[in-house]
Length: 313
Length: 212
Image 1: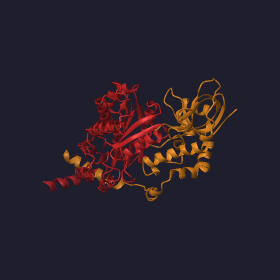
Image 2 (image 1 turned 90 degrees about the vertical axis):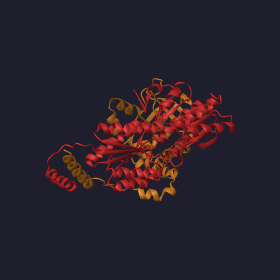
Image 3 (image 1 turned 30 degrees about the vertical axis):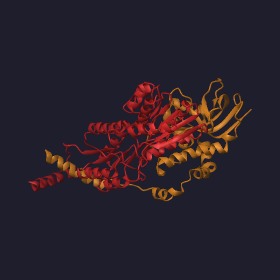
Image 4 (image 1 turned 60 degrees about the vertical axis):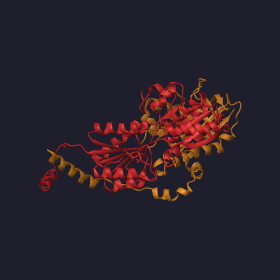
């Protein structure tokens, strides 16, 4: 049966090669691989990519690697095995992921990276990433302004293996360190996690009760920090996050967190799928592999316009 | 019917294997090799006099010309005075010359600035950074001959952008007077990113003279 079918297929392939146009009836597959959807940011990416892929007539395979490079490698194997035509990937580490993306490329499957870069070019077709440095500067400028350019503050860092943690911290410090009266009394990683943000904040607060501000590398850590501060009755401490999640939007509106920076997660994921579609159909990649998307400062002034990592006009 | 589809897929896959996946390696290996030696301050100092200032001198229009054209025909203004990365959503950054009068000053903040009137109506037309903290990456972003894709990652690209600000601060801005600036004339060459609606352009100078 199988052999007959293959023969028939080959026959049809010959007909096709002769130039007879034939409509496609079953959809090609696009794999969408991101960190855990527990963080609404990654969920928004997956939802945005999936919606655009469906709109363009693709089937989708949505997977999460939980920031585990080994698991990511297995998922890439799964995507290869399932015959995916493209992989949309928010990767599990800027060094560790190079091999995984190379493996997909060797299997003839192009990768379109979103949110996080890898430390190599020419392996993925696109790397569409938020301008984390520009965004961090916006967040830090607002933080410094809210603090009156002085005071003791705490920085909560993201996961160390993630390049974005370093870029945001650098963006923060390139602004804040220009103000000699701003003093960092503690700097700790809370690994992008809300629960760690809470517990780290609790401990830091015990050791350093005299703080006026907290700047966090992402919104989930900022949510953890504000919860710990509020539990300790410290409503005076200024908290600034990064991502632009709906949770933080609601906190800003309620007078909790003071500011965040929105990354266009949804739009970024959709752009990656559009570029994948073009590549699948024409073999053409974008004019430049690495593409930066600017972030937008969110404060009480515009929080009302924010919904799922996009601002309405 | 499924057979048709299998045939389509097969042919498509064949076509892709033949036509797709051509990557052009550029300077990446060199960049990787030199990663340990990445020195953005030196990179900027090396091109400042020879390339940066001459490029902006050549490219800049008066602020009035640039902003009028950006309002009436953004594409034309971008072509003539602007630059941005080919992909992504960054705004255009324009090269411009200003010649006006300082109408307000902020020197208490580390991110000091003066507001400048260039058309004689006593109202601020732009905000000029005078340091020591300089915001953003306008100088880097105005230059056609530097490109994010030639850098290892965002961190190095960011350090490079910051080095332009550090350079101009050390060279010019920290030598400027910090008091009684309002009412003085100002001439400068520099760059500013297209501002959001209703906001003053934030101009970063590469040459500046305050006096009179």
